Amino acid sequence: MDLIMFEAQRQGRLSFYMVAAGEEGTIVGSASALAPEDVIFAQYREAGVLQQRGFGLHEFMANFFSNRRDLSKGRNMPNHFASRRLNVHPISSVLATQLPHAAGAAYALKMRRLANPNQPPAVAACYFGEGAASEGDFHAALNIAATRSCPVIYICRNNGYAISTPTLEQYRGDGIASRGVGYGIDTIRVDGNDIWAVRAVTQEARRLALSGGGKPVLIEAMSYRVSHHSTSDDSFAYRARVEVEDWKRRDNPITRMRKYLERRGIWDDGKEKDAREGIRKEVLKVFGEAEREKKPAIRELFKDVYEEEILEVRDQREELKRILEEYEAEYDFEEFEGGKEGI
Image 1: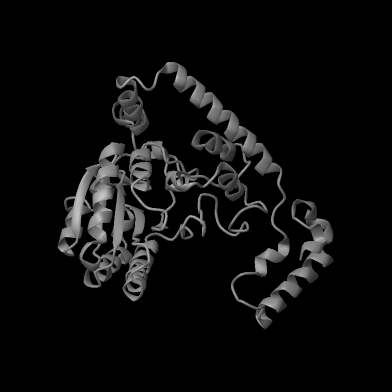
Image 2: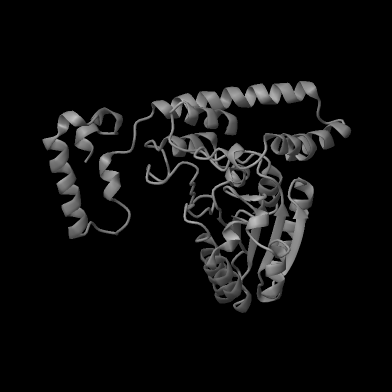
């Protein structure tokens, strides 16, 4: 999916994409240790978390193309997923805003279980990069989580770069883990490219977060961002191509997992070839279907903020309708569900 969607953006077929290459071990390993009732606050490189929880290719593609089947109704950027069904809160481009949200959600989960002990135990899991840890929201969130004993797991993907800024220019301390200790939070640093290690520490983090009435845990997963930050970035402007290729060869999480499986006799070249070809065909099939879907009806732009349409929203909708009618020749209504009548 990453390879195909990255190239599709370069061809002008969608507006934006973010690749997760190099960080799959952190993303999938941690997600596999969480329960369905746990709530997720992702950053923007966690497509693997949603895949692990059951987010399907059709749902991904609808988001990428902002079509009428998009759960966000075309009103968020590509790679900014949300799923009420899977307990995944909407992703925001604004850096670190999800950290205090996760602390608040974890506190709510704690209060709900105190009020009703029959509720299944649940934690909030919050993903972020080491660059987000330079934001004020990071410190506010950890302090709130620590002082209110919130059952939240903060998972930091330390991938070496905050867009174009390497870690050497981001901080002078020993990574992100030392900050958790400073706030009195149980903290561990793990090899983020080892899916089994990430899974094990996340399982233990969840147990700790739910123990003794609740507590926060911080995981710093050390990894490397193999791809560009996003399709808006050219990482070879600030790092050497040989550095990236070296990481691909020696510490790629998928390569490590493949070798692990091959040594145990449960994977081989034939299965690898069949899997890659089958997955590629399925991605391209769903890609084509999603690209042909219409955009949401224009009226969806004005829904869901308020329970009932308020005067200001009605006036805005009527003004847009007037403009569209006056300059009808300037717009292609056929790409929207319901066409011109869709407003």
